Image (cartoon, rainbow, N blue to C red):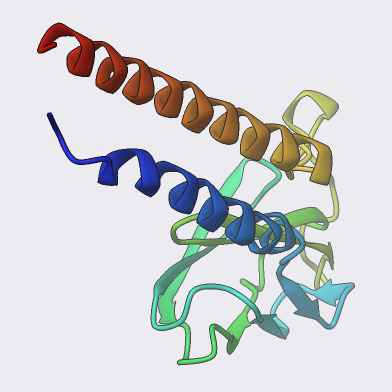
Length: 171
């Protein structure tokens, strides 16, 4: 007969999952801060993030008006934060743009850009508007955790049943 350790490990794993769930749900509130906002084309803007994974690379891009502008990759510090300054292109058309900090997850921050003097003031047509970013709410994250716990309970029941029938087959 097999030892009962797998059966004891399942509740411990489920407890660990339940303890980690609040951190997962709180992680969804992290966003990219852009200053100044609104900004003018050609101006320096500061991008900052706090509360993400430490020592991770983040690819910074500016998206909007049918344009994608990559910036240098940055690395978060040991506390999971970073602050960097980038210069908006001088000929950037006026409109709403989205900075994305792409790593394990994509964090976003909107910035309103005003065209520089003599720059392009027209905005993109409505069909090319910047889509809204999707963030998981607490209810959705809670549902994911609940499904994981349910899967753990089903696994525990299956292991228990297999152990029970294995023990009766040898008798």
